[in-house]
Length: 307
Image (cartoon, rainbow, N blue to C red; front, top):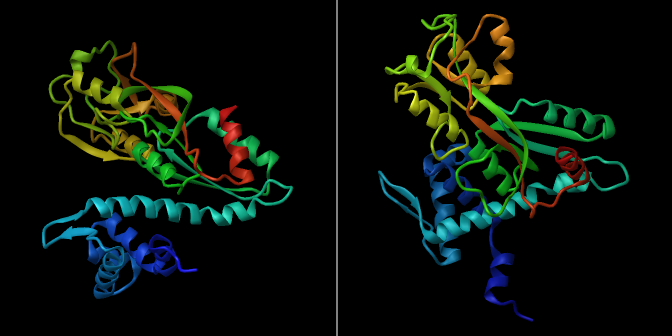
């Protein structure tokens, strides 16, 4: 019995072409894709052309200054990510087969996730399932959601961006509060009785990459605007440790979770600035893709975080 054309595509398609296309779409450059794939540029260009011929549609519009996926290209990229995400789960699923809880768990977390709830869940998971293994990757909250959606992470912990991804499940884990801080080199260090008005006048600032109106740290961004800090942020990072470093070394005023900054305050490295009441609140969510096939270890860790 002959196969219909859609079925023939599955059997006849060279999956290496699809892999090359995913990399091209992610780096938005044939040259950079060739570097990542460790191939020569003509080989990557040829792979794209062959895939377009096989699909029968143009996938990329590009010239010397412009690179953009066509609508068909965007659709193929999204479907390809789903396919590769499912394939990447196979080793974890296979390792999870058996009576013991084994397998690997990949957790994507935002940098500011420092919580005894998470710590206790990790400790209990390891005590109960010592043969299971873990990888914890740190990313911005938007990246956390993307990795979970693409099944590159078992699940994630991060702040909520302006629009929830309808393909994902969000469970609130805890709420943290942010404050503004400065380091010993700053002129306001050690001063008491300050008000928000004292920050006005274009004070230089540093912050997280998600400190935007439409991103996870929206309440912090709104307060920074109200305080009239300089609109030009001197330094940004997705890492809490690096934001803290920039504050301590005097690059500018910056936000940190109050419970995280407590030790540096006691050590004389940070000084809290206004507002002292009603600090910005950020809800931290457990983000899970219900379409992801979880192994036993992933299911156990997820259950532990959900309580």
